[in-house]
Image (cartoon, rainbow, N blue to C red; front, side, top):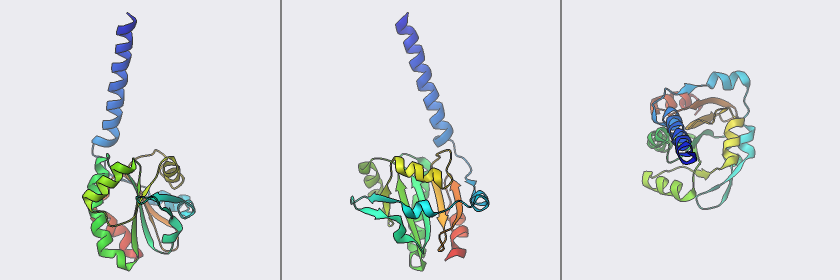
Length: 182
């Protein structure tokens, strides 16, 4: 009797977790623009520039080193399908506009070995930082209250958050945001 109840509860938990995963990650969702919220709530980029995270070479990288540039800060994970889809466009945009002051920063939320393998496979050409709970806290401070991935924030040269979006971004959408800032 006890064993069958336990199995029933365990099966229910697996079903609930699977449903939650597909609701968040597997079902394509239209990116939700919250740029107007960022502007209206005056979400400060100061927590970004006050933070430091380790890179894939285990060197501590202060984000303040990118102050004065147009920063696209992208919170992502290798297991996240929309994250995996948008990164090739980020690589192209970094190549195209890097000399004009655009810098992508990937804030990875996974184990170093998995992040390194994915970055190598994709040929990522911008800084990848490793975040854990501190990165999740940072994302919340700058507008990602529900913790969705990917989460992307665009910061202008004066250090203001000018756009933030939860969900995958297309190259066209991101160019429309960053080109006026360059």
